Length: 282
Ligand code: ATR
Image 1: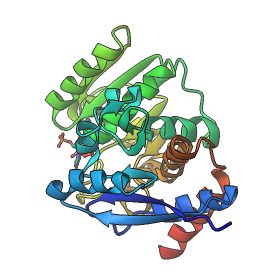
Image 2: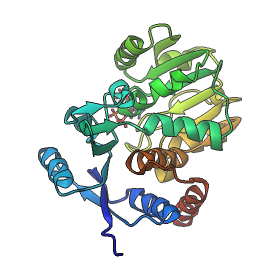
Image 3: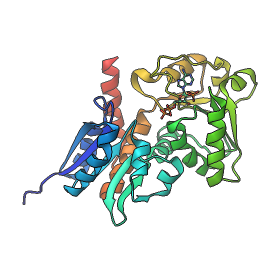
Image 4: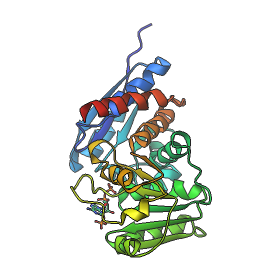
């Protein structure tokens, strides 16, 4: 019997460099699922109509990337707790509750940190650099791992304070603090894990904290490829371990796949394939 492939897509702008089509085709091969997976570059005005028409035509599921994650959250009929906490969504599906929105970024990061990087997060001191959308997507799942403390440091301190206040609504007992990057630079504080969520690698900025901060810490950069400026900085600065966000990219995709198909793909070989591809471009 011939089965028509189910349609999937990633929506973003820009979206041309998204690795999601390769990742999901690799996942689909593991289960013999027939899928198509395309990249769609949209504008703010065309986003909601595209989503509606896509699912009305029987589309299987959507991934959402920058800059539409908040919009995806806002146009959903039903929000998983992950999307509620993040106030943003990266996965959409049409289900029993209508248009359902999830955010698999945080759980993808945790899986990469604990499974591939072999870190234990409980009772650890964690520092997040940056307080934008990317930080908001990972903060809840990090707190679920019961760290000793979580500090959010941002160039603009008020944005870190705002993110912390919002997070305390969901986690009133968490030890979570806001600081400026300058305060971090001036202090002698030490952290077990430092996660870069800033977009400094994309806007051509430099890492402005002291290299001493990285010494003995595991440093994780949510960016990958050429944009992973922080990971390369941490390597030079003497971090105890360094990873870029490629692993998180693959893991978040695996959780999206599970939402759509009810089965979770293997990720190790797909990670390896993409790492080799990116290395051969350098
Ligand atoms: P994203 O969704 O990727 O998090 P965003 O919401 O625009 O993007 O947030 C970008 C984050 O990177 C912010 O925390 C920003 O700091 P400010 O709030 O002070 O703007 C941070 N950022 C961007 N460029 C930076 C740089 N060169 N140095 C330090 N932080 C930077």
